[in-house]
Image 1 (cartoon, rainbow, N blue to C red):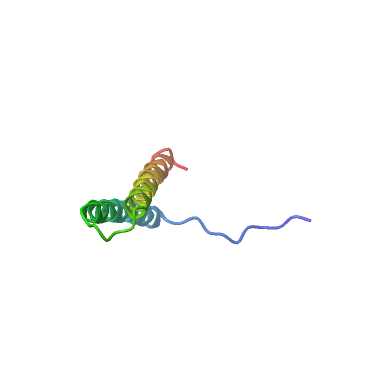
Image 2 (image 1 turned 135 degrees about the vertical axis):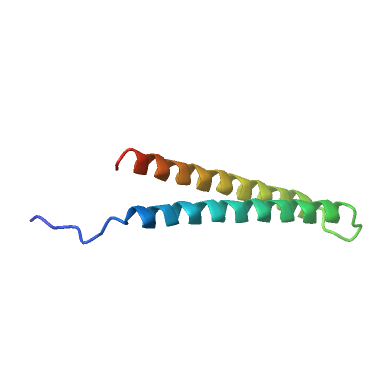
Length: 86
């Protein structure tokens, strides 16, 4: 049995919107990473903060940074695909 896909390919404008959204999300993730690191730094000077809090926040910040890089890579790949006529 043969089935037809009902998915539509977004227009160039739609793809550019997605690229913009990916870049915006990447910027947000970078901002989250900065805030997490600032919080970790503030907690390192606190005598009441749990010992595990700084390394945990630093790992979360690293994950946000990785996510931001991946989002930017996806945006660039989508742009390259569009330029190639795909």
